[in-house]
Amino acid sequence: MKNTALTSIHEALGAKMVPFAGYNMPVQYEGVNVEHETVRNHLGVFDVSHMGEFLISGENALELIQKVSSNDASKLTVGKAQYSCLPNEEGGIVDDLIIYKIKEEQYLLVVNASNIEKDWNWISKYNESIKADMRDISEDYSLLAIQGPKAVEAMQSLTSVDLSAIKFYHFEVADFAGIEHVIISATGYTGSGGFEIYCKNSEVEQVWNKVLEAGKDFGIKPIGLAARDTLRLEMGYCLYGNDIDDTTSPIEAGLGWITKFTKDFVNADALKQQKENGVERKLVAFEVTERGIPRNGYDILNEEGDVIGNVTSGTMSPSLGKGIGLGYVSTVYKAVDTPIFLQIRKKKVGAKIVKLPFYQNKK
Image 1 (cartoon, rainbow, N blue to C red):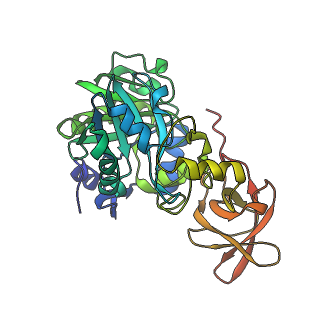
Image 2: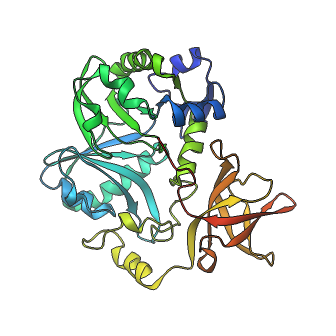
């Protein structure tokens, strides 16, 4: 297993460490519910340095990105980021990612840790003819997610940039925690606001320590991957490997909003047909109306007991105190308030289709 530059610090803090995407990662420190509540109401910091980073540069950089990604990267201006995905040739998804326009003819692609090699090979295949400059800088950079409603106030002392002026999915390259040329990005996968900080491995320990020091009067705590999962699920954000993968199309997954047919990209024609003609299954959100916690792989049933789909993500929501989940069902069952059932071990447990997000962030 690989370690991040902060592994020894997590161990010293008493984190429970688990293998994740080939890395030794902290899954929790005090407990999922405590850490979840900390991010929702105060401030938490995650080490997500296992994520991958590719730098795509040169006069053909945009052409390559436009070819392999579903969203329209030509709309990006310097200082703006974009959520997108990499469609495959069979209609599925190679990965989902964030694309940053660092400067003219230079883009940063941030990909999932488990897909770094797969994504690199996929993009490289299309780059054989386009010939943009590609660099895999995943091993050189660390990533911290500072998430929660207190993030702007707590972190402002660490930078000369006005953090309140950085809009959602925008970023600045600036000083932070005594380090020059750090990416401060108003992104994150929790739905509670905050920033993601990209810096070199040699700098991340200083950044981590200063973030914890600056946040101590705001209730900051280190947060593990388990709470990251419950936080993203309450917002209905897809997790690669669960809710989307090589067999699920962006249209089925409700990602039509990042699939732009004003340009040519891998498998665009087939996906356009899906959007126009409809699909046989859709990713839906549901909440459990009886006692029970949904888990990945559980069958979803109709009132007659027929299997109509399966759960892709599920948990007991710490914010709502009820079971929630995502799953694919036959399209005829996708409407909000449709009653469904979950096969939880030997019991048939009631649930209903709901609208996302599960959690409304009032802060």
